[in-house]
Length: 214
Image 1 (cartoon, rainbow, N blue to C red):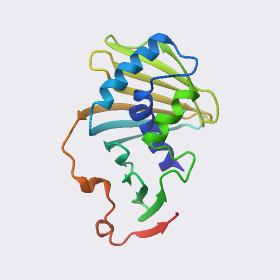
Image 2 (image 1 turned 90 degrees about the vertical axis):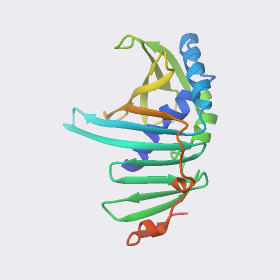
Image 3 (image 1 turned 120 degrees about the vertical axis):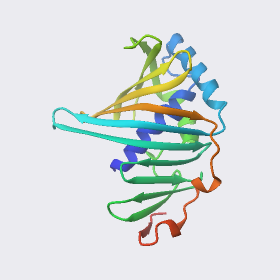
Image 4 (image 1 turned 30 degrees about the horizontal axis):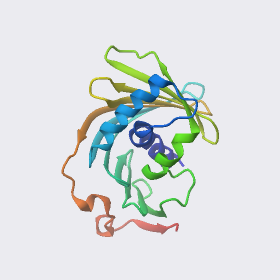
């Protein structure tokens, strides 16, 4: 589902890639960079990230742009993008789809592709090879990550600010010619977040159809 891939694509770089320590077929420079980004990212108790998203498929002549926001606290998160709101309390995932006025409820971990921060941290260590690639801008560094097997995308290019050690943007290339580009427009570490951000409140969606898929 499109909503699922958007969620996966965004969390991969911010949570998993930024926190990888051991990589299969690892490039020492790439690993050292990811170690540094990992250490800094793990020091944040909460995160708020604003980003822009572009998807392009030249063969199909498709191009679209969106903006979104991610709130993150451990395995709890709230993602707001393209008319979809995804809320997770670490155990349950609620996805509100505005156009359909539906809320889909799933358990975390019931879908092999529905990665969570904890799952990413445990699986990415063995399943990727990495290497440094040339960055476009001075002061940046880019790492190419290639999955060894079992993914629906062929590679990810992750770019970080070398001084701030923060993810700036990433590009995901999938197997059917889609290119997903994300640019982080605002990175706010340790914001004060309301605990209710990560809890679904049915009263906020009074007319929505609730579809429990557990």
